[in-house]
Image (tube, rainbow, N blue to C red; front, side, top):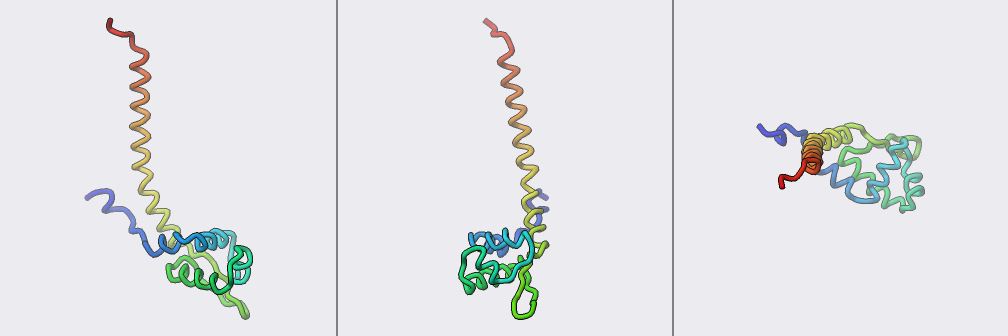
Length: 120
């Protein structure tokens, strides 16, 4: 069984939701804490209907939840999709570590060769 088979599943809906620049900006803003739609729209210079559409897509992807407070909804990030994304990204760590180790070995080999006298 290959390492890729054991890798955590990647939710493409999460990546698709985060791929849109305004939605990514919303997520980055919510990283600081929950905010009502109006505040998100104002902070990011977006129209409120546009912001609501983006938040709906983020909610459908499981990235945010809305809590009702009086007449407004306050949006918060949900941690589970980010943990899954982090776990998926971590699977690439071993790949890069192996590549860096090979590069280190190659550079050490070159350094050793440069230090050897020529056989002339």
